[in-house]
Length: 255
Image (cartoon, rainbow, N blue to C red):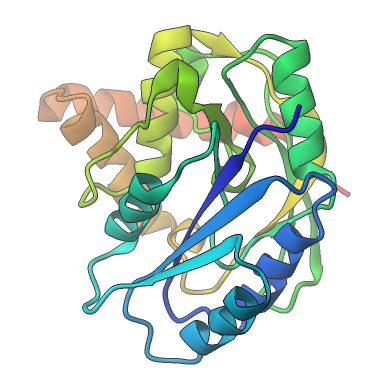
């Protein structure tokens, strides 16, 4: 149980959060990892902060893009550089709890799974609890995922030996949901670790904080990624919104 985990972290102007994010990786009980950070031409102190860590720990690796190319491009470049058996995702403002990797890898092996994720709690920009916990079905099928993204990006991990490196077109929005759909289309069903293993930071300027942007990008998954025509995509989006209101709300708990 000591295979290398490659942690994919794109960064852009994350000086306020990146230190806590990296420290949450350093504090992992499972220590065989590499953290691949690709900075998307930040204009703040993000790069300087990351370099403080790269000097002290060669498992933390930084690539600097010369021009801003988008989060998807940075994520794909990090994936290209990954050499681990497992790929895990951690955005530059989120935090892992100390036993996140250890528990997930054990769960993968115990359940003979090539992909899993976990529950997570939500925090604000200052790191304060929002008293909101996001859970998921204990068996997640492709059909369920098709109408609701139950997988938090900061909690997902998959086995390269099973899937290979899965690259989603960099220009597409909701790259994470498209990735999980690609995975579950192959294996049909998976299970989450039924524990809180990470903290998701909700920022005022994030896509998840803007309902209009979120609806627009989710519609794009049906229209562009799946290739459905406009009318059918509208119908699917209607079902998606119904699922969010009725089904997913059951998995969002007040704590």
